[in-house]
Image (cartoon, rainbow, N blue to C red; front, side):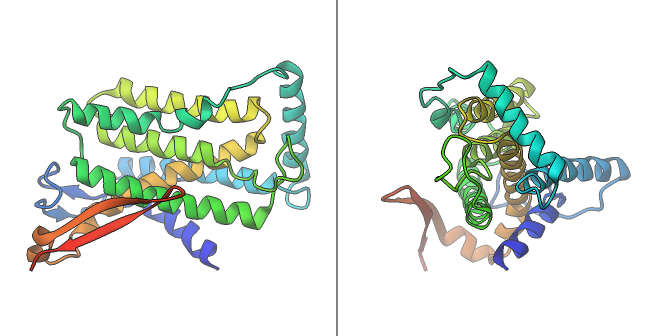
Length: 263
């Protein structure tokens, strides 16, 4: 039931467009929600439709009961990939490339390149998007129990969490700096695509796992990115200036938030 509620919200919220009169100062901006022109509506619809189709293809290919053609195509593609790239070994590079777009974003901020959000705002968006992405991916892994192509006993194949994280960070990099530096956006998505490719070439995931992971990562990032300005305005103005929000990290890789309030 939780997954049924999260997925529609994740998809629908990516269409929300918020325009701020002062886009740089997150805490002081005045938010104005305006109707989108037809051209923007088509762009938003496309940005929702494409990743949603990728997720849908992955779900349909999960079992021959859902779609026999996609199921067989998934397995045939994996067999052909193994014939051509049977000796491929990423040597764990894909464990790191999923974080490269995020590192680039913080590197640009550290060197004085001002983005669409402040450093604090960007961090909060990343942590919230990461939690949304992890929740959707972990629930899908549990529900589908898809066996990995290289290990029939490992039922955590669908979707690819490495790919979802890579496209999540690439999308946040695009939103933060893509309009100023298009080459940064292109590079981020290229690294994300390479991460997904390595998961397939290394026989750790089916191609449909990677497609679905890419869609979920993109939608998670877009959802939180566009909701963030609205959520920050829910706090009373006086409280917002006295509230400190900091990311926290627990043993085992858990993330969260620490709140401090000064009366």
